[in-house]
Structures are given as C-alpha cells and as structure tokens.
Image (cartoon, rainbow, N blue to C red; front, side, top):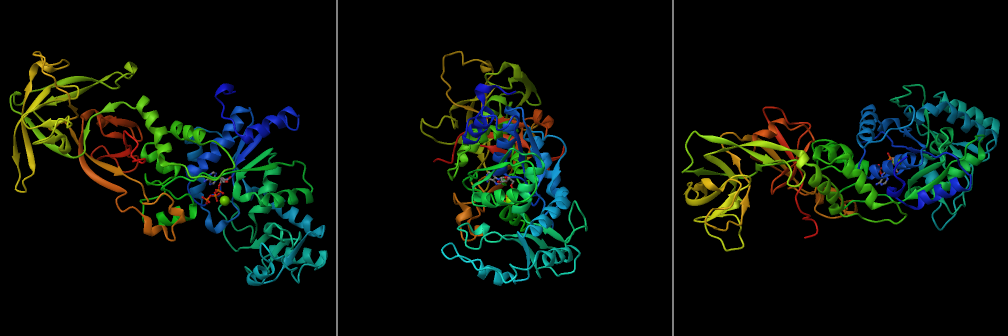
Length: 552
Ligand code: ATP
Ligand code: MG
C-alpha cells in the first residue's frame, strides 16, 4: 500500500473512508470508463489518477472499461491508444479489459425485464414530436401516445426492433418514469435505439444499441463497482442511474459521485473539438505536441510523473474552475530541473572564429551533466576554433545590464574559456555574419589570472562537430484563455503556435532517446521528437521554457 502520509485527500476519499469504517464496503472497486471515440486528454488524466489512485491506495481494484455504445463514432485504434496512455501514465487495470459491449446480451435482458414490469415502452413518435412532448425546465412534459401500449405488444415490438424489422429512427425503447419530473433525464428517457452499424467489438450482431445512461449503471453493477466516479454534468443523471438499478434484478448497487471536470487555459478539452482539429489538419494528429492529449503531452516531453503530480496539485472538488497553464508547466519544469541532463544547443546561430586558437586543432572538454546532481555524471563536449552562439547573445554595443558578448568585451563560454569579441564581419544586409574573437587560454575552469571580472556566461556549440537539427518551438494553440467559450474556435487559433527553426546541438545529443528530456542550457527543456526524428534528421521539441512566461 502506498505511503499513507502522502496520499491526497478529497471528498471522495472521505466518503470511501466512511464507507470502510461503517462496514458498508470491505473492498473498494472503481473503474475508468472512456468512450473510444478519441484519444485521452489531460482531463481524462484527472479521472485516471483519481480512479486508479484510489484503487492503489486502498488496495482495491480499478477496471478499464470501454464505454462503447456508439458504434459509428468509435474506432479500434482509439481502444488501443487509450490502453497505451493508461499504462504510460503508470497505472494497471485489474483483470481483463472490460467493454460495455460485452454486456449487450445482459443489457437486452434487463430492457426486457423493464418492459415486463410495465416500465418501458416502444415509442414511434418522431424525434421532433418527442422533443416537443419533453417540455422544458419550467413546463412539465406530456405523455407519449405510445406510453400505454400493453406489455405483450411492447415485448413483441422490441423483439422486432432487435430483429431489424424497423428502420433507424422509426422507433426506440423508452423507460416509463415521469414526464413531469423536475429532472429532464427522468422524462421517459430513451434506453435503446436502432442503429444499423458495424461495431468494433460485436460486429454486425446488433442493430439495437443501449443508451449511455442505461448501460453505465448496469455495467458498474455487473462489475461490482462500489464507487462510480464521474464528472458533474452527470449529477442529474444520478436519479436515472439509481432508478434503473432499483427496477431491475441485480445484486450490486454501486453509488455514483460527481466531481468537477478539469478545464485548462488555452486548450480545448472536448473530444469532438479535438477531433475537428485533427480532421481539419489544424494540427499534425492526435499526438501533435500542442494537443492537450496524453499522446501529445508525451511527445512534447511531459513525463508520467509530471502529469500525476499535476493531477495531485489540482485536487478533486465539486467546484468548476479553470486551471492555469502555468500550473501544468510548473510540474514538468520541476521534474526536468531535477532529472534532465544538461546539454548545449543554439537555436539561432551566428558564427564565432577564435583567431588565436590553433587552426585544425580542437580539444574535448569534460562537462557536468547536472549542476548539483553528481550522480548524473559528465559528458565530453568538443571545443574548436569555430563555434556557434545565439545571435541574441551578441551586440556591437550594449549597456552594463547586458551580460553577454559585446564588441570589445569579454564573456565566458559555458564549461569552456573566456573570449573577447574583437571585430565583426557583416553580410550584404548589414547583419553580423561572423564575430572574430580571441580567447584567454588560461581561463578553462578558472577566473582570469589578473583578477579581471567576467560576469556573463553564454552557451555555444562547436561549428565543425555540432549536429544540425530541426528545433520545434511550441506555443499555446489558442490566443484566448477559454477557447471553448469562443463562438468558433477556429477564429482564436494562434497562427504562431509552432515555429520550426534550424539549430545546432552538441554531438552527445546524437544518442538522445525519443521523449528523453534535456535542459538546453539557457533555453529551456527539449526532447527528441518520437515521430519525425531519424538518425540523419534530428528533431527536438521544446517542452517548456525555463521560466513561467504565462503570467507576464
Ligand atoms: P469529452 O467531453 O472530452 O468528449 P467525455 O466525458 O465524453 O469527454 P469519456 O471518454 O466519456 O469522455 O470520459 C471518460 C471518463 O473521463 C469519464 O468518467 C469522464 O467523466 C472523465 N473525464 C472526461 N473529461 C474530463 C475532464 N475534463 N476532467 C475530468 N474528468 C474527465
Ligand atoms: Mg462521455
């Protein structure tokens, strides 16, 4: 069992503690029930950490259940990606993977049971008529003319529905509850509909499919779930959840508890909208590093620990809120600050020639991989007569605040020597193309002997030994904190959310593994792209900058 002291606390865990204390339950069983109609996103991670985290901490079980009652929208590829993402986040489901579709036989029998009890009927009203009869929040609904069809007739009609004798949309099965209930979901909700669709698990066996509200509670009960945790939009539906279980013959009675969804600034969290970004090629795929999907975050360089830590920090409550992007970024920054080896890269190179450094010569410097963690060891970095530095790290003139290289002044090259800019060469546009410098050979690992103070330190990469790379600089995908509130999210897409540049990195990075995080000194955290990078064409993604730039 996990360290009790370090467990998160929230109202759901308090309910569980009470249930255990009162002897209502002796073992805890939760489930994570994604619909396989898209990739998982950071909002799902909140639910995963909650459900699997509870199972871990209480020595219980957590099922992974595909809530697959919508055959047209679902896809086997999503089933696979969801499993990968759950495992990558560091969780394991108990037993085999579950599918709501495995319960279609049982669900059908329960529907028949409701019909037999006079609690469900086949309705031939048009969708429009049903909508009109449903009433509004202030007006009660009206009973359907099909509401009082006899049990025998309903049984026969439902059998015909199941046999494919009616067209899609011609009729549906509704629970007979209360058309004047203050809860709209209780006004004779549809529980079965006709769909002539191929299902990724059950093939062409069915042409009637159960609705979510009918399926979910029964699936929970069949799996022996004790605490069914879902987001707040299902609060009203809890009445229907309980009603179904009270009116069928089933042993286990799970309880549903609701918590608030995660909303994250500058992102969308609806799978429908994320799917639109993908199908309209506004991003490169579900795993585009700008996407809030688990696959996107992983490709961006987020670690499973950082996402779990984020979910711990945001907590679980019933309050709706919008979480700042800075909070997610702080989690990965803290993780990588401790755990990512350092390396040098230049994203916008300008050449330096060190004129008093012997031509053709070079040396190998030994540099620490981490400033404070000795266990991370050292690496070799080649130093040569020609190197690259960042364009923005050089000025012909600057005031004292500018602690980088200035014409006629000195600066230290990280892990190497002190150099002095002597003169520049410019191209036809008047831009500095080469900076000619001298170096002080007696400053490797020590200050200048005569006591000269050199304040600035800049990063660099050998021009002849460095590796050319593509660097992808990512920014927020949307220009506004709440793109979900925009009338059309297309109008608030940030056109500069991805800038690709050609940079150069130190040769040790040829050994980088996909997704492995590095701190590129003074630039931020980067990782090797897990899709487009090859040995001949290295591609690094910027995970996050060194400092929080969101709150500026
Ligand atoms: P979306 O609205 O993005 O399509 P969904 O709720 O339809 O999401 P499901 O696949 O049904 O997606 O979700 C599986 C589980 O994850 C559900 O229990 C759901 O409540 C939870 N979940 C989905 N989005 C969030 C979120 N933003 N924050 C917390 N939990 C979420
Ligand atoms: Mg859903």
